[in-house]
Image (cartoon, rainbow, N blue to C red; front, side, top):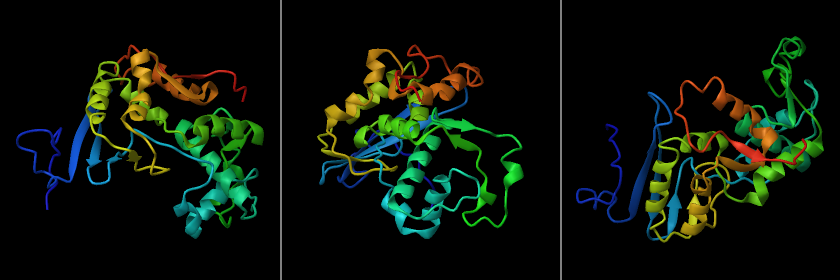
Length: 265
């Protein structure tokens, strides 16, 4: 079979029977820079009043996802990130699993989170041990300032599992005529009477209606590229926007990412 290009919308004379009447869809296309393109597809499942998404909405809670606690390989990953010393073998406890999960979330969202100190030089490499049980030779290029700091950063990011947007995705969505393309797509999606959202990453399903969905993108109408996360966490991403990405992405009237102050990580 051959991959077929998904029409921009199921709302068209030639697309009414595309999903046999079970689904409707709307495609978002944002061009964040020269030669680059980001796309998201929203699907509305009529029978269950459910909105299906890939990347634009995310929510996370402090408990690791089920898949990470049922597979031994993934449990090792949680314990790998729960270490405070390169060759430490931490006990497999619910608390350590949550600790590892908390750190994973902060790392994959912010790359250089504010509660961590990075060392990408030779020192971590000199401590590698190929026989280390959790893998990677025990490589530990980050140290964490304190459990209090990382817990605060995670709690601010999670807000008890409230929906949000991946920060790197928000950088992209703020482009496309300074978010105009995203707002147009949000308006189209908001016409469907969905009652829950199933994103393809992290927590699901989410109890969200069109109003709650639209509120997640309210930063565009406010005219400020603000996020609810700690400003220390988005500092590196802001530096990237203003620095080495400056020549490859279009300018946005919303400005670079701005986090909340007062975290004091």
